[in-house]
Image (cartoon, rainbow, N blue to C red):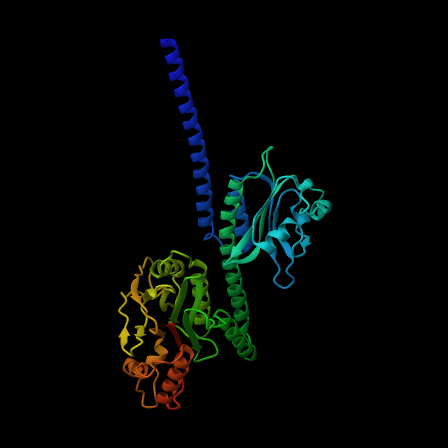
Length: 454
């Protein structure tokens, strides 16, 4: 009898050991996959060149998802065709010559629907197109394709082919590849913005040779600068009314603003002023807006964002800096989280007409000093309350007697604004400033942003 009990105990211990071993294997796999995603997020900051970022991300992902070939196909916005931005494997060079029509094959279906697809038997799947295989002679046994999504818009697809060994692609593989595709969308956005900055730099460098060409290129620079700003204001169906305006004192300037939806319930907004004027200010403004938009995402506070952006800008010790204020507005609650760096005091105009200056904890302007820390402040906009941001081109505007418009006059003006829309307030404020200046030339750039909770 004792021998039977000993056998049962040994069997039980063996089962527990086997279960523990399986648990450790699964845990090890999860840790490796988590490390891959962490490595990918770190690599996004190592380069802003699109091809290099794609290579780094895919090589890292393939460490835990071994496949024979992998490719990134992007959507051509003009034709809706898919083209191979990156193709790894023996037939990569031949594959990059091919373009797929919208909806063609598995890649086309994923790009059209925005939904991932696993095909573990291409021969029996009618959705699979063998046009690429016929062109290259590459045998496709199975494949996994996921969309690259940027704010719900499909930028392209990420595809891996022929899982090594005899195994099939699984749901776990799909989840991993979808997580890999998320930072790819960020990489594409950052690379696109960085490419615009590089093009702007090259265009502006060529303007120093001849005066006539300089004037022409300055006009181009102004157009490029304006292209970084939002082109459309939100519709009347949004729970907020936001409007902004930039009026440069010269062809190009250093004031800037931006706003965009982080997700359906959060709106990011910012406004700033670069210390210099002309081309240097415009370039610094372009780089700053690129970093702000590229790094901002869900869960990141304005103070954390400014700390990260300052680290990037101050690293090379630039000859200019930028005062800034930025924030995140929560549409459902009216809560606003804000942070600033040496900027003018914002105001809240309450629905009952009260004017309240916003007391934010002061920090240094962007790029003024490395390792600067930026802080978050909180306030709530009730229905009908309005937030106003502006640059010192408003308060320091001068008339012929060299009197300044001043914060007191701005406060008096805001007392007259209840009931106005955001666009009406900005138009009226500029008219008020220009009437005060009475023909005196504009000496500084002007930027204004106003946000109303409807």
